[in-house]
Length: 328
Image (tube, rainbow, N blue to C red; front, side, top):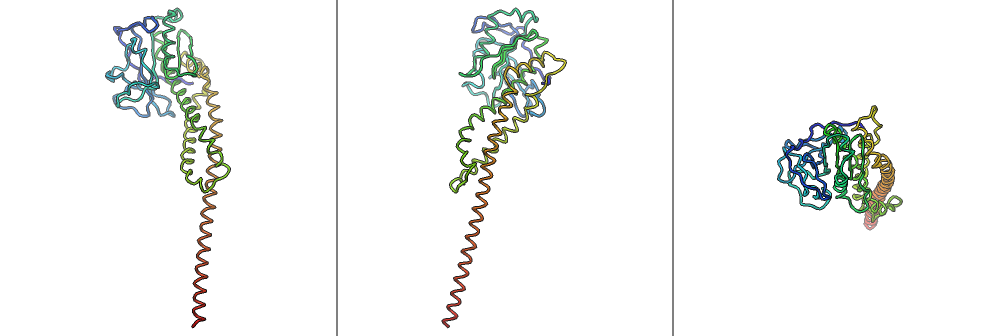
């Protein structure tokens, strides 16, 4: 996947930022920061852009300020309450109307050097993993932990923690955000298809036979077919980036994206979703064909009956005229 450089990077937290012990007892460096990121289709003037995603996506990664925090200060120091707060996917107080919903929480922890990452305290490593896993629902895959070229990454859907030297953080963060968006798009399609399977099974008989009582379902079938086509378009849009070949010569940022795509099985998931969408498309195409044929036949039958009634009426009038003329 080609690395996309951030259009604007979030402001770095000041060295004087207060920090506090984490829930596991490890002390985070004073420069650690938590960024709340949303993927938006348009950028408001007051929003700070972290990353402009590839043009085909038509999305921007923007910073969502914390409640009561000015938009000009997008990066907040990490404290114990920040680590414990729920993600956007969990039940929490609704954000201010002016701010979009949070799609990604990104915890960045600068390290002195690559050796410092390798020698990081076990408590700090446990803190990163515990924070990343805080929003996992039952049955979801565990946290993915990666150690690559002096950078430690803890990844779960919606939460990412990074420990790396400051000179490597910016390039890593840009690729992490792009990969997080692609994974979120795949996860959204998987969720929508999972919810649509019961509807598909209920609509299967209509792919074989359409009856008079099924006419009231035509609008529902049309809406479901449109939804399937929309999902197909979304899947096709992210396909070139999910299946992007490895970059040569490799960079740390490109390797992070490639490794995460492989660990998250994104290429395989993309292919499986394509196969499932083919089933949906085939079923609803047959439903549309049966519905169209039935309505055409129904209209033809109605027209034939109208012609028969008109002919009978004409025959009655002719018979009446004939009887009247004979009576005279």
